[in-house]
Each structure stands twice: as structure tokens, then as C-alpha cells.
Image (cartoon, rainbow, N blue to C red; front, side):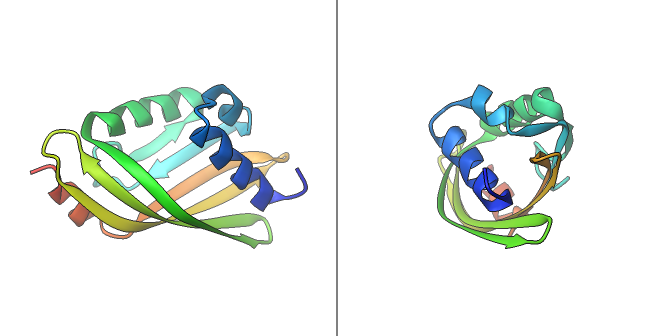
Length: 128
């Protein structure tokens, strides 16, 4: 891959294709991801196992559709902005928010993802 933006694009392609093992190959050995603490799947999650546990926790509450990805390379970081619709698996209620993800890198791999949902209160409101 020629750059960080392309690496994040490839990560998205692999996730959309259901190639989890391939996606995890793009993560640095010390990979971690952070979600807002206010969400049921919030906090820091370390490595592929942490990502799997976070995803399983998310899936207990929601499914989601991700559209309109925009990526911006900023020296040693990439910012991805998407529009996401979260559908509660329990209530059937949904909410759409913009999500900003900040990617950092080490050794040519994705080292960290920090996720910022536009309105976590709106998302949590789908659960009740």
C-alpha cells in the first residue's frame, strides 16, 4: 500500500467483504480501539480479541449501516468521516449520526482507532 489513506480504505474493503482475518492483518501487534465510554461497547479495546469482544457487545444492541465514507490524510494520521444508521436489535428504533474516526499508524500498520459518534445520547435513545 502506498499510504495511510489506502490502508484505511483497504481495511474498510475487507470488513465489508466479511474478511475479518484479512482486516486484522492490517492491525499493528499493539493495536487498540477506543469507543465513547457512554456506549455499552465503550472504552479501550486491545488487539484483535478486544476488537472481537467490542463487536460482539455492539451486536447485542445494534446493527448498523455505514455510508458516505470520506477520508483525509493528515501527515501521520487519517480522519474518516461516515454517516451511520444504528438500528436497535431490541426496539427496532434507529438513529443516524455522523461518525469521525481518527487512525494512527506504526510500522506501516494501523496502530490505533479513536471513534467519535456525533450524538451518543441519540444512539442510546434507540434502546428504550
